[in-house]
Amino acid sequence: MAVYDSEGGLLAHDLYSQVSLHADFGGVVPELASRDHVRKLVPLINRVLERSGSTRENIHGVAYTSGPGLIGALMVGASVATGLARSWGVPALGVHHMEGHLLAPMLEVPAPAMPFLALLVSGGHSMLVNVQAVGRYETLGQTLDDAAGEAFDKTAKLLGLPYPGGPALAALAEQGRSNVFRFPRPMLDRPGLEFSFSGLKTAVVIATRDLDMSEQTRADVARGFQDAVVETLVGKTVRALKQTGLRRVVVAGGVGANKALRHLLKQQVLDMGGQVFYPRLEFCTDNGAMIAYAGYVRLAAGQVDTTPMQTRARWPLAELQPLAAIG
Ligand code: KG4
Ligand code: ZN
Image 1 (tube, helix red, strand yellow):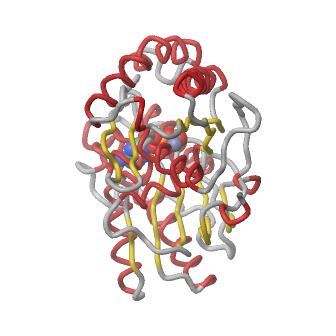
Image 2 (spheres, helix red, strand yellow):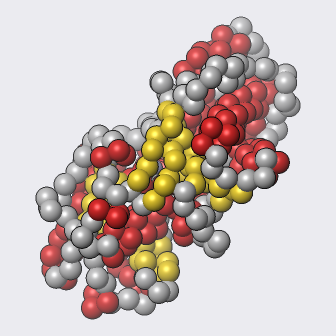
């Protein structure tokens, strides 16, 4: 939940994490997630509104995540946001979750000028996107199977790490030694900008099958896995820069919080004379601020919901309207 102001920028934001709720189950339980949103959303809205110093009189629109995602959870947000907008007499607007991620770096100073290349890596997506303008997103390549975050989560589970796996695996990798385990860099040796991570997970299964997994060995495996993912992501990003002639790079999505990825990407992009722009760590993983910003940009351009309370499990980025076409 966040309040964004055209002049003051981000006035307040906060997040209620369901990690502890889902941890016992090793992953998100959709029905529990929806019910917990019902309980937590209104108190969170009240708290953030109060902290922002705003009242209902100076809120001019309400944006919410319309998709893609789990329908039950989306419906809670959509109905609360639409209800609030109706009672306040202001427009509501459903925002695309991935557009939120792509625009998250715009919340930082300095913000990247468009066009820029975005490496969008989350639990559900791994893609390279040419962000030409708001709503004008050209997907240059994406994963053929698992997303990068999914690969982190599944490998973490193999190593017996708690949910959520990505951050736990990254922490363990810091204790590991490089090159004790050398896993394949999927598709890096082939032309193109596609990713594939499911084979890497299998390689980890095979390499660890008959091993006595001491703490150091687990850390070495974690390090070997992280190195393989990071080098693959960075290698393809550099290739995309060369192919498109773009010079500015943004990393977005939960895996964008990975420090090894941020470090190597920065190094390689600076080496080729480019620039990197990273959202702060808390704006890489899912957050309300990016949705408030994306909603602000579109509401300010005159876009409002035509179908009220629309939620979408699937919603290709290419279906978004360019901002220039609104109004
Ligand atoms: O964008 P996000 O918060 O939610 C989705 O829209 O999917 O991304 C969550 C994903 C999870 O797979 C999580 O394990 C991964 O991002 N993640 C990380 C790190 N922090 C979150 N993966 C690697 N290193 C991290 N530090
Ligand atoms: Zn996300």
